[in-house]
Image 1 (cartoon, rainbow, N blue to C red):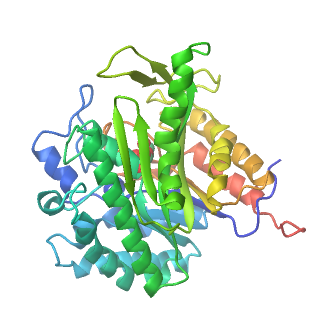
Image 2: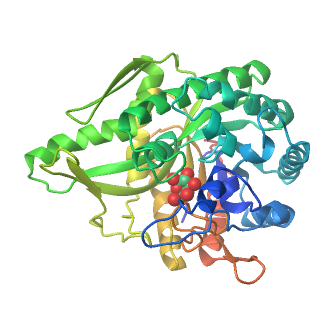
Amino acid sequence: MTQPFPNNFLWGVATSAFQIEGRIENDMTDWERQGRFRTEQYDPVAGDTADHWRRWEDDFELLKQLGVNSYRFSVEWARIEPTPGQFNQRALDQYSRMIDRLLEKGITPMLTLHHFTHPTWFHERSPWHRSDAPESFMPFVQVVTEKLLDRVPLVVTINEPLVWLLAAYGEGKFPPGYKDLQLMMVALQRMLEAHRLAYDHIKSRRADTQVGIAHNFIVFKRARLNHLFDRHLKPLIHRFYNIMIPEAFQTNRLLYQFPLVLAYDEEIELDNRIDFWGINYYYRMHVRFRFNLERPFDVMFIPRSGEGQSDLGWEIYPKGLRKICKWLEFTGKPLYITENGIAAGDDQLRAEFLKKHLDSLRKAIDDGYPVRGYYHWSFLDNYEWLEGTRAKFGLYHVDFENDYRRSLKPSGALYREYIRDATTEDPAGS
Ligand code: GAL
């Protein structure tokens, strides 16, 4: 029997524009055209997505049928500002109609401004490590604020800054394709400065809008329990990945030291300008020290929890959700689970994953953590960054071979039931 969740809890699903819309020209499709967007094993076609840009009206009906009361999605910068300073009115009109339709259906929009992708011109003019990057981002933010945010109560400025940076500046897998950790930290600083500018602008126009960041969190564990170096390594990696960014909002310092690998310490004027933390949570990883200066550690999946693993090898660890809420207690901010999901061809696995994570979330709420909403990743099977459409994250199946036909999976039906049970009026009105 599902316990009721607090009144006004937001039940949602999450997507990003590039992963579902189709017909987008941006840095990722450009990268693809150059043959650079490749991994060893797979050959994804960037932009091979769920055709949502044409099917959005039907899709929103599917949202309604799913029983969610909120929807997290992103607007595509490259679509809205295809050339610097020139805005595509038709795209803005469509996004505006989308927001209206969601509201008509009683679905609260949560809008993400930056979800991994850029107009191609951005990398040519002012990639994130350059000091003018935040300014290049702002005209887009201003237009979106003006035309769309009057009806949007929740805004995520940047999705997973660190995940994107590690791919684009750490491993060189995403455009602009650097492999330079020091430069990555500079780019992170600029992204956080861009958040601050966006925050100030949005608040000056729409004081009630809640503005946050969706951060990716990983639970780390020592690979070898009795190994001294693994023991020292774990907190170093945890701090970098999970704590450094939220902490910078309180200390006004972006600070990280990893002996012989990375040293960064700069002031950053954030002054706690953030209204909520978005938690994107997928898995646990294990860390193992190596006597190797070039690469002093490994971070890997060892499915030890007994809960199984996803099609991508990710260890399922539902307790992590509650742990992360605890880590974020020091911020004093409301929390939203802005992403949580699993790549699984076997839908039974997704159903179990979903149920266990919601139960873990329920415990976190009972413990008093201020979680205001949960967004499952994802609404539809979609384009996953390095794996293409083979990674199945959707609560709705999309038949990519047959006119993108959608059908509800049993895990989607389970979510619908869970929401129904959990939103039964709580007499205590908690
Ligand atoms: C997140 C990302 C999403 C989605 C998800 C599943 O890191 O924000 O865009 O791809 O992972 O891998």
